[in-house]
Image 1 (cartoon, rainbow, N blue to C red):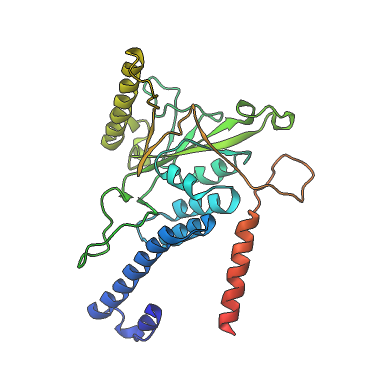
Image 2: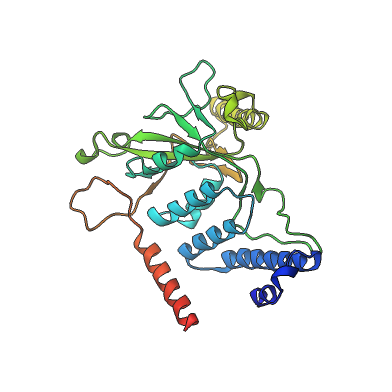
Length: 299
């Protein structure tokens, strides 16, 4: 219905203020409908796809961040609950990806962080020492939220983060698996963080001077101190787990308690070592069905 309204506007008139308003109203309605569909959709995988579609509708979402989410959906066994944890700052291991995610997204870095310096730029361990920071532009929540009548398409506070970061590293598979064939192989780990380091690669090494990251670090330190004090006073009877602080919340999955998401298996290969990522069966089936539907509509 909305697309027909837009197509009926002549090309030469589409830049007029009136018609731009029509197009904007269309986009707002589409976004709202997707958010409502995510809330109502019972199928876990479809929820993930809807979120990916939602990301494409926001101009301030970086292309490589969208692609990163897309690759998680395409090549791993991620669930919708996993996605919520990821956006809340979970420390995630992509089990047995052979470093594919790390290698693919490292070139998008605005700086290479290190934990080896006197003032470290990251506290995480990495098998390959350089840890690329690739956060850019915004990240947005998949959750549905109400838009007040008369308001423009402006997400409520807590549903969007304009200064988030995404850091990647690698981990030897022997650290979480005893299988013989995984020797000398490694997996990618990553974490979405509340605030990025620096805005430009010109300031490599000055990561700790980022106000947003300092604020996030202080918040994390306060949580850690609170947990330690309660433990020593033996008041922490029910356990106060240390949470990571992410762009859109907090997560119980930290470096000592990682969220492990396996890649999809290539059943056509005899060797167990992964030389290339393969599309998950659910991903291929979904888009094959989608293509079939589009073809039938064209007929």
